[in-house]
Length: 236
Ligand code: PGA
Image (cartoon, rainbow, N blue to C red; front, side):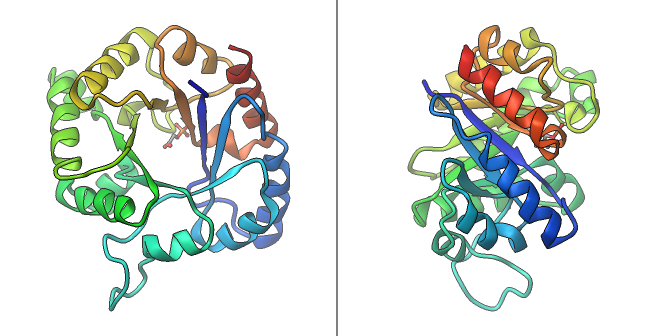
């Protein structure tokens, strides 16, 4: 299966000039043997859509509704009209900082699917849940509720919350256990790993833990590092 490598820029960079430069550099990560997706902040999607050719376009979030009176929200229908193909849903920063529960995440997954886009549903346990032995229970709940009534292909990203932005990546054996659970529960073959991915550990998630791709946060802001990650995945 072609590896899927997703760059999640989060709330970076902070100027259009910087964004333009980084989009051009990210396009150089386009690789024949990988599916590379860039998820920039909403305000840079238009520019990215114009510049990118070999790299696909993704969004970091979206509304659960197509249109209407929801101040500050961006709908999947709008995203589609900008050439977006993928939408990250239920990222842990949305869940913990913005209080998105499994019900909201589920509505978003369905809305993304209704609009013919591919959801990337993020699941994963917090450090507390891990320490209390609730990793499996957490992942199962997030999948059951998040995918309830959802029809269509969904990509699942296993992102242990404690590994995100911490520089403490999950070891491949533990990640593989979560991947197996997700595969058993959803039947999905497209399961990717995220959480402190960099060029030094990218290979093991694909090779050892059998993930079909990676969700890269911090390291995707360094476009050389990101290109290196893509090259490593392409070489496997
Ligand atoms: P990170 O972020 O690679 O900086 O840990 C991953 C993510 O949150 O998507």
